[in-house]
Image (cartoon, rainbow, N blue to C red; front, side, top):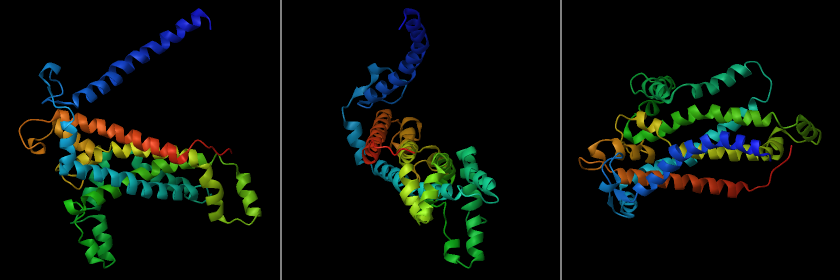
Length: 304
């Protein structure tokens, strides 16, 4: 490599490295460091912090609210993931066939992804889950299913499942498009050969489509895990009470401890140390899920 080329590469790379160190690496290190201290504000000087070691972590693990929030995000990750990927794959397979209205249906399914979560929450809580004039109430009433029509979806008892349904509805289109793009790369000759051998559509899906979508599925799972574990906006706006156990997740609880109500911590002071400890644990959870995904899917790749 010539000396001039080396200087040019350094000139282009150095600003990116500096920005990374300032705006990502430093805050990360400071967050981990702060999680071992008790402090009342994010902006407080380090000299005012009180070292408590792992007390922030052990205290969180004893709090029922934190355990509930973690279980909620675990259900979003697993149950929500099964629902979203099953429906997304189903629609992606259907969209491979040419039929009238295909493009319109594809646009309708993807539409929720271009709408802000707040607008989607308003739509679901006010016009679908509403106990007075919601769409579900009208449909179940028309079908004579009074018990289903009377379910108060926005009450704490049902709020988690209502939120999960709404979130899955808004997520299907995104993964459907990714799967569709991957399926279009599979040579049609494979399916023609399978048809000549007598394989029906179901056998072709399990024997050709699904194995060749392995890398795509791994990527989608990583995207889903990151979004599910960092689940925040839906939780924050779906319920008026930020500490509603039905919609509480670790990221929302972390925000409440760092900036929120005194009710969250049981006193007038904030618990920033515990909030940063939640951030560290969420990061470790994401790394653990990534490791599991890569372990399960392995390094073997199917070639088209």
